[in-house]
Image (cartoon, rainbow, N blue to C red; front, top):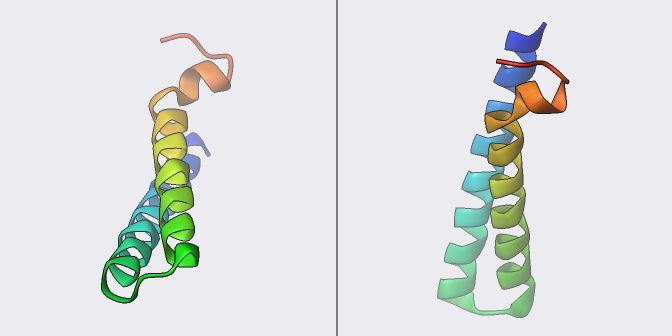
Length: 64
């Protein structure tokens, strides 16, 4: 079950990283504060999911 959870979080990391890159690229080409905000928000979400995945055992109260 933990392996599947790691897979889902990994998928969320990939999704949010791609969406952040896409949004920032649209901002670079077209401008607009909404695209910049969306890109930065998803960049922060990507980092947060990465931190969560890295420290998953601690979040689940398991020791390594």
